[in-house]
Length: 211
Ligand code: DC
Image 1: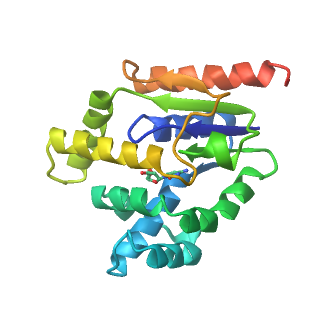
Image 2: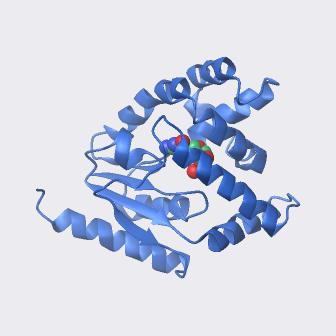
C-alpha cells in the first residue's frame, strides 16, 4: 500500500505521517527533508539558494543517509528549501530516490507537496492535510521557540505565507492537492484527533475495492 500525504508547512502532515507509519508498519519518507538538505548544503557551501547550478550540484551530490535532522529544521533552511525546490533540475535529481522508496515491496508512506500529483499519482490513498494560516503559524512558532530561535508570531506567519505562495506558484511540480485526494483540515483537531482521522481514511481505502 502506498500512502501519499501532501500539505503546506506546519499543517501537521509530518506528525500525522509518522503516526500512520507506526500504525500500518510502513516505512516513511519525509520528502521535505530532501529539499531542506539540499538547501542546507547550498548554504553551507556559501552559495545563494537561488543559484541554480549550485542547487543542482547539491541535489545530485545529496547522500540521503547522511541528512542532519537537527540543522535542516532551522527556519532559514526551510526558506532555502523552498527556493531550491522551485528548480526543475533539483526536482529531477531527487525524483528517482523518491520513486524507488515508493516502490518498496510492502508499500510506503511519502509526505511532501507533490506526492499525490507527481511522485505517486497511483497511490492507494492520498491525503491532503491543511490548517488555517494562524493555526499553522502558531505551531511553527512554538517549534522555532523550542529550538531557541527568537522570532515573532507575525514574522512566522509572513514567512509561511511567502513559502506557500512560492511552493504553489512554481512551474515545476507546484504544491497542489491531487484531484483524488481527501482533504483533512487539522485547524481545530488535536494531534490524536488528526492522526485518528487520517488512520480512518487509510482503513476506508484499504477495505474499498479499487476502481
Ligand atoms: O515540508 P517542509 O516544510 O519540510 O518542506 C520544505 C520545502 O521543500 C517546502 O517549502 C517545499 C519543498 N518541498 C517540495 O517542493 N516538494 C516536496 N515533495 C516536499 C517539500
